[in-house]
Amino acid sequence: MLRLPKFRLEEPTDVAGAVALMSEHGEDAMIVAGGTDLYPNMKHGLFEPKVVVSLGRIAEMRGIEALADGGLRIGATTTLAEMAQSALVQERAPALAQAASLVAGPQLRTMGTAGGNVMLDTRCQWYNQTHFWRKSLGYCLKKDGTVCHVVAGGRKCVAAASNDTAPTLMTLNASATFANDEGSRDVKIDEMWKADGIWNKEPGRGEILTSLHIPAQSKGHRGAYGKLRDRGSIDYPLFGCAVRLDLDSEGVVEDADVVCVALVARPLRIKKVAETLRGKKVGTESFAEAAKEAADLADTQAKPMDNIPGESLYRRQMVPVYVRRTLQAAAEGKGPVHHV
Amino acid sequence: MRGIELDVNGDRLETAAPDHWTLLEVLRYKLGLTGSKQGCDKGDCGACTVLVDGQPVLSCLTLAAQAVGKEITTVEGLRPMHLQSGGVGADPIQDAFDRCGALQCGFCQPGMMLSARALVAANASPSREEIQKALSGNLCRCTGYTQILEAVETAIAERVGAEAPRPAWVEDREHVREGELEARTPAKEAK
Image 1 (cartoon, each protein chain N blue to C red):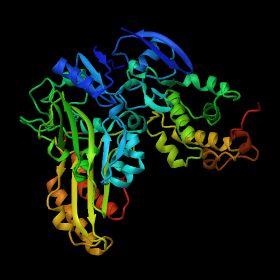
Image 2 (cartoon, rainbow over the protein chains, first blue to last red):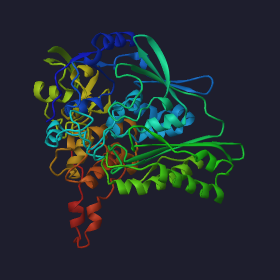
Image 3 (spheres, one colour):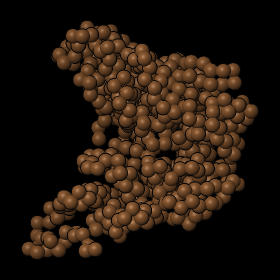
Image 4 (cartoon, each protein chain N blue to C red):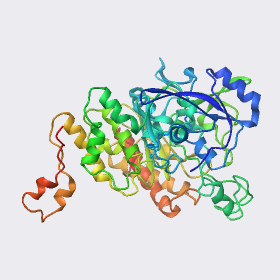
């Protein structure tokens, strides 16, 4: 039995009410949407807010809107299941729908939200444990301690960004709207990360993510997501990679992007992927060769560590495999790439 | 402490609980509905699955206060609701689980049946793969998945009057004597 620590629940019915509560209670308050990340963490004694501000009854924050220019606006409390099953998202941002469909299991996707997955706390096998477990080990850098159990002598927390949707949003050039007591502001998902596992986001803990904006993609947009995990359900990623390909009318790659997750504190963009794939026609031998080269780039740039469960050597060996297969899936208009 | 009115299995129940109590804790320890199981209590195992407005959710990660105003169905509600809607006996999912031997220790069963119920309500004829996906958030530590999947397939087949699939264990037995096969194949009980 894992009990939640004591707190007071507030259920505002509009964004202004939620902002006012966060501003009133400051660091004593935390935001919750689906609760699938925060509540287990609270049960593990990782957070003990005095006030929990639930976004669940704010109707204006939920829903998927098709924008006239071909883009999408997704309310932050739209569930992952709704996002995964949405024909609009599947059509305009296939990688995002695929990533959402692979988060956790069916019940958790019914509860977990679009905004919650972006704002997910970083994860580490030395951190996501009960208080008893962590205490027995003398705690860690991220919570209550001074030692990093992943990097000997490490002074910086390397807990891993483990949100499946974040890398897809980066490949889609998406942005997030945050509400705070000064109004609201837009932040590019690409620019919202910091290399700090304790809090890996530039927006503060008190700012409320209200919606995601995905701009219109190119005519020949292709996207896919690949996810490595132990079981075909429930688990967080052991490695994840999002792919975007922009093809011209002949099926030749004009631009490409690969962003990986479940490595370090922030999602990692693989450099020089576009240069490698540009000019290659999908379905040809030269594209397959270039996809292999791009996978090799990922292999040299992405180095899984022992921060999340799963042997890091195995995860390392799967990096090029998943990047190559996900590139291939995107080229064929398929995906997600998933081993079970 | 706050007063909470919950709509559980078609009944409006009044109770009171502190804000930090989960729906699972209120169901089990305030309302006495112990059918929903407290397994991992942190969202891994699915033993606490209940239906909220027809959707399977984990009651261990839902606050009781957040379930106010929503229709909650627990395993205790399956049979009464089936009877209420004009059915006979147990809910077809429960009945099929029973006849197919879809349990060993039984701890995962309430969650399994509610996930299956939600699937069957949303999809009249799911494939084996769709059933596997729908039940993928429910862990069975005894690993008796085969019979569980067969139970769901049986319930679906019987609903449309089709022949239920032959259980996998029948195929495994090479030494089944004549007549014994029929005797061992679960048959629907006469009403």
